[in-house]
Length: 439
Ligand SMILES: Nc1nc2c(c(=O)[nH]1)N[C@H]1C(S)=C(S)[C@@H](COP(=O)(O)O)O[C@H]1N2
Ligand SMILES: [Mo]
Image (cartoon, rainbow, N blue to C red; front, side, top):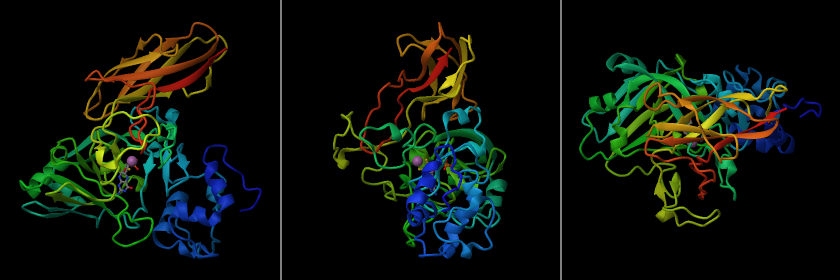
């Protein structure tokens, strides 16, 4: 990399540092292929498709690109993904990007601001005209459906759906938990269009023996090993048959973004995002608990009771995560804001959600949690949409303030200030706080 390459001022710099330190390793991490010693020719197939998606075009002369070389289109503007902006790219896996809270201020998250969590390499072929979805296993009539079939045979509906990664907030764990170091922004609420999973399952005729779903998609494992899956999660049949689950082919009124699962994805709202399979091409109904990739061991499991930070927990005792927990995010103002001189009032806006439950109350504090102010909290636009809150708070004098937000769900459960530490770094719903300077 030339020494004078401009570095982005944002956190994306991590990626450039990675390239500066070890370009070959960076290639492997970002594009998921072991580089050929001196050429980017290795970037055939999915690795090349990923680079194309980042740059926004195919690269006719890609064979001439040296390995470990950062294309100028990326170097000049910071890491960019076509159709995405305002995301912070994490550097430890192929294309994982989160959204800083102030870029999540919209009540419906624009596609450009929707986080990305990829466990493997996205498929090269995302053609909606040839895409097929298979429903098989313990069903009376196994189905093979095109997207046109889905549209013509089932009722098409549009829903706002909040999706949050089970590991959102992991970056704040101490001691650290392994995995993507998400801070606050692995959450979004876009508008999705598709059909109800339950309608498709009814058409397939789910047999009595079916107790679990198993989800499959077209992305491939980082190792490139055929048959090895990046992820395959599944839910107990009672959740699988919930009428709020969707199979979607549109996001915010357009085709689904390639990084968010084009051309077809599953939605199992309220539970960790990992159940909502992208590049979705098969659901199998099983007569056993699904044992796919990231279903076994300690994956998506919590200790059976609270543990002190750093405690070793026996995997066998850990409990499978179902519903996500009550949580909220302040999206305006941006943390660290300096108010104009003499300004003493701040309009606070944000969102709250509670997995399978709804949020009943939202409180704000400007005095480190001693007193709490009710915020106006909207009902969800539809089940499983996040709920928006707004309140103007008054600051008594100049100085440094923190604004804290605390949501309470319809079961009376509220957000803790501290993190409920667990070995794998899941379900951090500690209160969000921002800083505000009044002068
Ligand atoms: N096929 C496939 N589906 C997937 C994943 C994946 O890696 N492959 N990641 C899952 C995880 S862990 C999360 S949190 C969500 C993220 O959805 P998004 O990338 O659209 O934000 O997708 C889920 N669906
Ligand atoms: Mo996730």
